[in-house]
Image 1 (cartoon, rainbow, N blue to C red):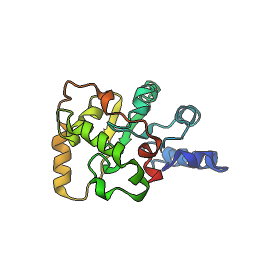
Image 2 (cartoon, helix red, strand yellow):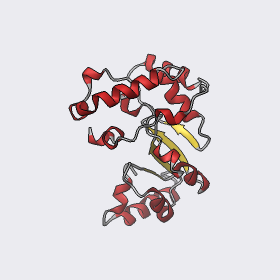
Image 3 (cartoon, rainbow, N blue to C red):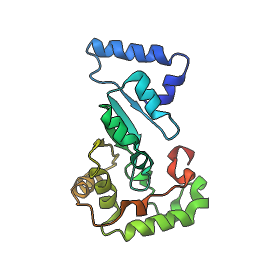
Image 4 (cartoon, rainbow, N blue to C red):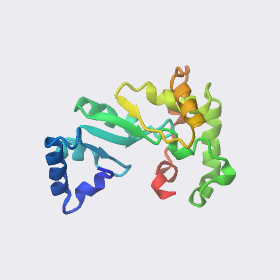
Length: 182
């Protein structure tokens, strides 16, 4: 399911039943749900029992790791795939090229980027090694536009986490944390 919110629609249960039939018929290997910040993740997992969950998480968006959601999903046998590990590129963006809706957060984003720059590794390496050290995360989904980006991501993903407190990089600004609001 591209969005867990689709399950809350009037035909949500019928849609899920259709997907389960497709899985039984062999057309689908596993069923998963993509969650967003406002979704009642554990309630949906309890009701529908997906095998996969795609969640937003990054070195700056540690909410679902810190509140125990990631660990609880893993405990329930749900395979976790994380998207937005580079927070939609916000950890790298030139402050002069911020989306219009984020212009009011320019200073906060600059502070975030400054913290990452002093983290002991390049920001890309920090971002990927942060997620790589969380045993309950099975896969990290990244987007690339060219081969050199993919090569840099593969190299960075092999970086060892430096001796720093990851919580120093977390932010709690709702606008910055919700890319759908940009």
